[in-house]
Image 1 (cartoon, one colour):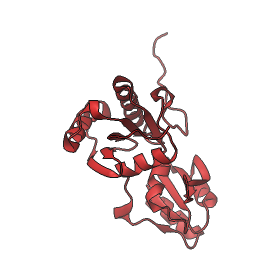
Image 2 (cartoon, one colour; image 1 turned 90 degrees about the vertical axis):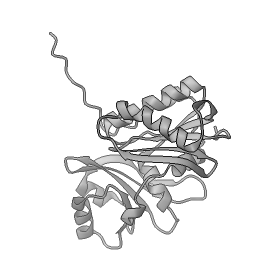
Image 3 (cartoon, rainbow, N blue to C red; image 1 turned 180 degrees about the vertical axis):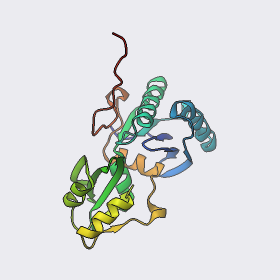
Image 4 (cartoon, one colour; image 1 turned 45 degrees about the vertical axis):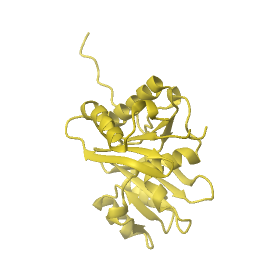
Amino acid sequence: MTAPAGPVLTIDTASAEATLGVVRGDEVLAERRWMVETNYSRELLAGIDGALRDGGVTRDELAAIAVDAGPGGYGGLRSGVATAQGLAFALDVPLAAVSRLELAAFPHLDGARPVVAVHAAGGNRVAWAAYLATAAVPAVLVEARLEGIEECVAGAPAGALWCGEVTAELASARDAAREGDADVVATDNVRRAADLVRLARLHEAFGDPALVDVVYLRPPPITRSTRR
């Protein structure tokens, strides 16, 4: 369904930098961005209350919630999605989930060249996908995947603009193997609350909170029980 009229709370916890926003239409009423120093479960709810105060909006006035569903860090994503679901159920408002990689690529899609969005996954691996602008939702040129740096460089479309967490190792491997690719200017390489809502609207993603889940490109770690 399309986004209901009224303020939308945005929650983005896909990395160590949390981003919360309150958006009405195309206007960002408030946006908070900070590095998480303890853990998301301790800081997220206080941050949400602060963002709502900054935007002059109460919880009961929210019309919908939109959340970054990943890929990204397990703990942060799980906290963000679970919090978004809990609030959506409690307030009886729809919830939309948006891909972190599409969100990173979205502000740079102009139709002139493909955009490769990257999330550093550790161990010389990256989560990445490639997109191209269309008149409707962005076209997916390469589906989100988790690969080594060399596989990412080999599989990305030619002449791409790269954004997200382009590490020095990735940039070096890419530049050695390809010509015509370029990085997004660092100051433009950020995620914005308004883009999260715009993408959710384009995908008509607002709906049942129970249907939203974290995007994992590899199984989450499971701690084995020590009980016998």
